[in-house]
Image (cartoon, rainbow, N blue to C red):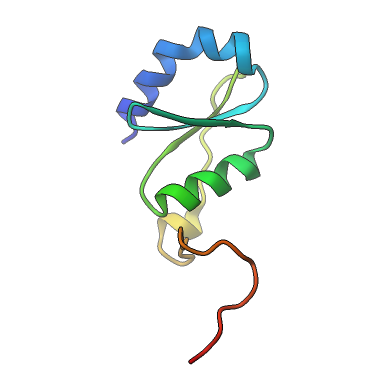
Length: 92
């Protein structure tokens, strides 16, 4: 899983280190989605755009460390990429 994204990161790692050292990059397929200051920002944007489909987040310049969110992986928590607010949805 995420082999394409890891390969893309590896091919571009030196460029990322020059321009984005210490920050978090989000990659989906062969697409560089963006760079973020915090893991929370990166997760938020990745989840907003891709929902529950896998995407890669890496902190540039540091050894990679797997990040797992079991609640999302197991389907206990559902990401809603269409929801843009923390306010409760109105009931009908």
